[in-house]
Length: 101
Image (cartoon, rainbow, N blue to C red):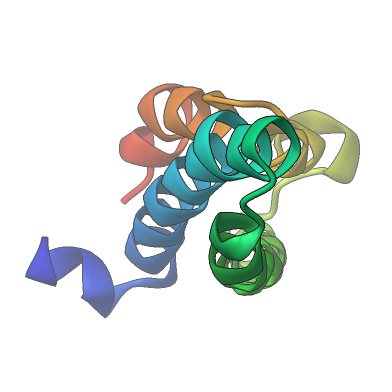
């Protein structure tokens, strides 16, 4: 895992994992707690964390896309779109990011 920190692609893979986990926690734990049980603390904690991870994911995707010479309508949009879909970042990591470097 430490070796992943040496490259932008490795950092993107780590952020993709964390962003994917934060999205799942937000969607399946924090939001239901907020709206079903009137407990907003989970959303108030996880929401900003997910927001920062989402922005890092977008920035790192653009950096890696430039390094790898990805076409926007090819690989780049698929990786970016994955951040909006639950489990999407895990899929992109397995199918695209793990094959780089």
